[in-house]
Length: 76
Image 1 (cartoon, one colour):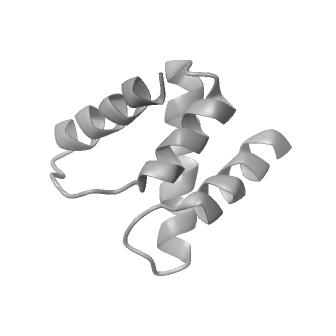
Image 2: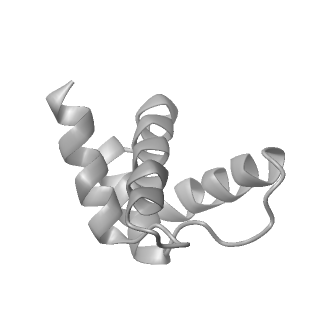
């Protein structure tokens, strides 16, 4: 089912005006697993992962960024 989350992330990044890849496949799978596929949880984790990616000057969210996002979301 992580393919659904990957499609969801791609769809929402295209709505935001981006056509490039923002999440690695492993990152999307981890977002799906941690968010249990729930759209609200996926959104929160994806946003936090993008912020973590930006702060490390990377261009694609990887599992390191998602783990940081998980820790951030769990601390709130």
